[in-house]
Length: 639
Image (cartoon, rainbow, N blue to C red; front, side, top):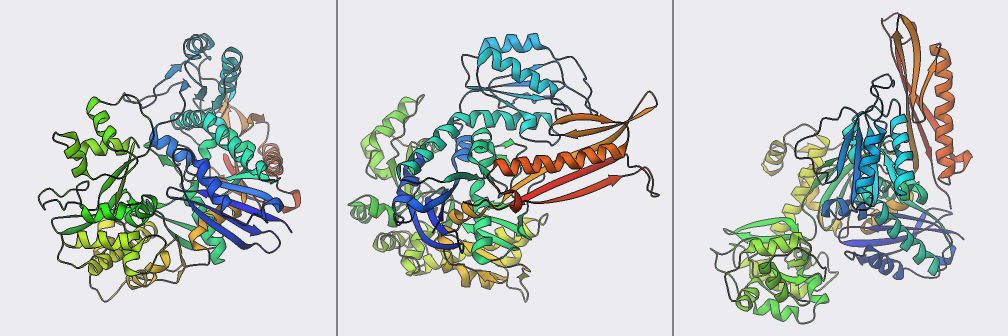
């Protein structure tokens, strides 16, 4: 009997799941807390919680990780130099730290616009090669002709011996600068991806697992570990992609909307006919606009671990994530006594960081460049939780919450507070951790409102359900103002929103929100078995998908018509449109098959579809002036 192992390292939890290959049934699962900054420890803990008898017979391991996303958001990628070739118009405040622009590039029909300035490239590489870990190269219209990128890559490799990432290798879409950004970020991630994947391989080998290793991309497809090492940028937002694929698999719904309630956020996405809805313009992460194909999603900063805080007698939720009181009571012995004895601030002092239930603990992470005041505060915040009042008395001078916020943003300090997870513990609807700590916190916060502790928790629960409905309808009603949707959801009308596809919920405590969500929208709401580890399932059940686009265009030079074919392999010229079409068909199919087979998918399991769109001069047919062909190969990896 053979099995497959799926792993998802999420923002709060790392989940592991074992699926039996013969009938695709989930037979074992385990959740562990995600560990920062070393994700591998959390992955090891998640696998340790599985029944070890299955592990020797695991033949496929697939991983979804937040590593790429977190690295970009935290700006902890390795130093990279970007070389832009051609007519690039850069903003005055580009966030790229090390770059140069040199003469070169091509035009729309793939002919050389200007000669490549190799001397400028040599001079720049000599200057920076000892201070960077890799190079990225993006040339103007390299998707029409990658010759200048390839020549630059060969030159840099011979001079520096460092990895070089080219824009055309990652995207065939227009936008030379955005391709450059994508290559730049990918190059930053290369050493991190290698370390992470090598560690994963080492761990599974140590456990006696001899399996094929794959990773989930942010478009919901899986790639071989070799490609994951070359293109780690494609794993950004693989978490939401994993939730979408997992929800579809567990609910047996090829078409469905998915609401994934995590610790930090709520993500909404959609699959139609077994394929995720994608963002046409490319994923945006940490303010960087990339050319990476990713699922379209609606994200809100409200999850199970969002901070619940009181100001002006009103309940606020988020956007910051904190450690729930119920979990802190398990992690830190004596925390409940500290919580009981905490000082309640005056109503005038109340703010997001000044709450009777808010505490702080050091993450143990080191950081250079701190100011003296920050160092003094950090010296007080140790391994045991302290309140802002404790910090004030030990510091002996005025303390602004902004100073604490700065340390939290630098991930040097972790906050503890009341959360929606605590509210569910109080209501008895989710009791994974210490319910008494949640009750103490609810009692402290309720004193600051007109409600008692149970009314407060029901209010929090209702707001989370409303946020789920708002995120869902905001996604489905694209282009409709969010305020208008919220007005309808909060109003008392003789009508409500109707959703025409099943709505699948994922996340640990989502079952508790079914009734509240059903009162807000008219929909078939599904909470499948194993919804709490749906992302790990999704990491495993993603299909192998490869899209190839080939463009055939007619050009006239000196009254002579020529037919050009632009593909990932470069630019080719033909005498007739029919010859170009035959070439494109053979090339597209070959590229799909080569990719799929290299990814470990059997030849007979690959299905290729081709969509072709012609643009003609008139409505009477004739030879098209442009033909755009999209080849899509689909296959299911087998162990």
